[in-house]
Image (cartoon, rainbow, N blue to C red):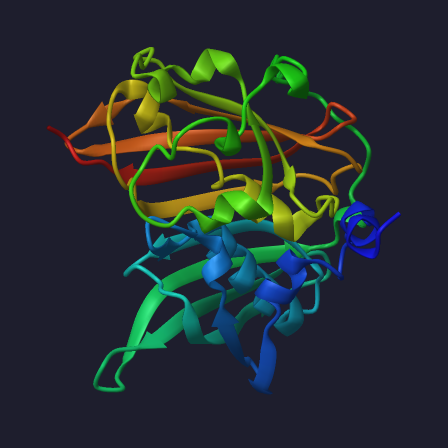
Length: 286
């Protein structure tokens, strides 16, 4: 087997993948971290919000005494751009099972002034210490097998501008939520897909923060086009995902005043609900 083909067949592992390298932060001082935001996670020339959430999540995981994000709420203040950034964290409270911290990501304008891009408040714990008791009425989304679903490579780009992030994802969309790509949006605010990282790295709590904000926006199926910037996003990580592809289901029930909500569920290969999120996003009408 040629060397290049052999290398392509090797699956990346947690801690040794493009996602890990591109979310890695360097501690400058206690609670202060440097990072170079990668252009590989951009969509329409802005850095993806889920990728940014994972960057801040990694910094908080280093700063806090507990390892795993349980809940993280982010307010997106200004659009982040690829390039150098600074993350400042603060420990709000530490306890036996949970610790809470906040973090902000800054970049610099043309005059060298700091501009805050995103601010988060998060609680961390240890997912491996949680009891196995599950009582739920939630059921996994029904999505056709991956060979009956379609990825970005199967059709034209839906929006103008960069779509570099799609090269880093294994994304196979349910045909029932693809009417927008054919010029026939269903009018239902739904998006469902198989999800993973293109290099084969299995999911972990940090990559779940990416998964909740990586699908095309439900606004497309509502007949809208263009960028749908996130205003606020809250994610809950419920358990450590099993190896294998994830299933992501996103729904919107209400669009009013130029804003919509997106409720996401992420299910693992063991049929467990591993993450949930809700975000408020702005849409362009007309």
